[in-house]
Amino acid sequence: MAKQKNLYQDLLIAISERKKLLAVLIDPDKMKLECVSDFMVKLNASPATHVFVGGSSVEENQTDLLIQELKRWTTLPLLIFPGDVSQLSSHADGLLFLSLVSGRNPDYLIGKQVEAVSVLRTMQLEIIPTGYLLIENGKETAVERVTKTQPLNRENIQNIVDTAKAAEFLGMKCIYLEAGSGAVDPINPKIIRAVKQELQIPLIVGGGIISKKQLDGAYEFGADLVVIGTAFEENELFFEEIKAPIEFEHLSNEEK
Image (cartoon, rainbow, N blue to C red; front, side, top):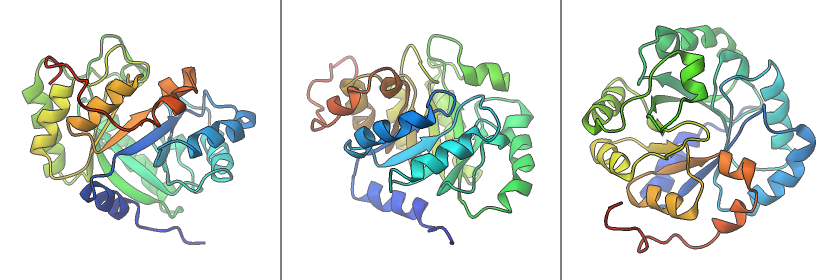
């Protein structure tokens, strides 16, 4: 059956309506198939609007098996957030076609993407070209180790902004600011605001967000879609915490 080809358009509509979009990132290496049903009951009752699936290093076929199981338990849009070509699956709804524009390793700028084309021809995934920027967070991330690239210096905000804008000029449909899984520090709100002010395309922000305050702050400073992974892996009660209305007034002047 043909897949619905409107994920990106739906994203643009939701953003135009000022909706706060939230993706839960599920790592196939960390989610056991027998735990999916219980996890998805909590996810479906949360404000989550999207499900992302992927990890830096995942065994072959593991992503496909997980996606098939997830599709049994939710109707939310399910997009692959790939760490490698082996993580592609025809059972997903769409794919963030990532290019690691913060690094200079040609394999992750264009090489892996070329390798994926022969596989993607056989699938009916909606493909969303996404400029992926890894920002330093206080510790080495799995993305750094796998891609053999360095993150962008979080103090050099202008370089981050220029990199994001260059990706937009190259034709990317989204920009993804990533601090990395289990980041010590999430993306600084000043970075989010500066990048958002320059972009005409959706801004996705993820990595290191483990509190309701950090989530609210990411939205206030311009994130169109926030991605949370580790916080749910380590504390499923976080599903309950994020149900409260978004609050902005408690952010300090320093954060603003």
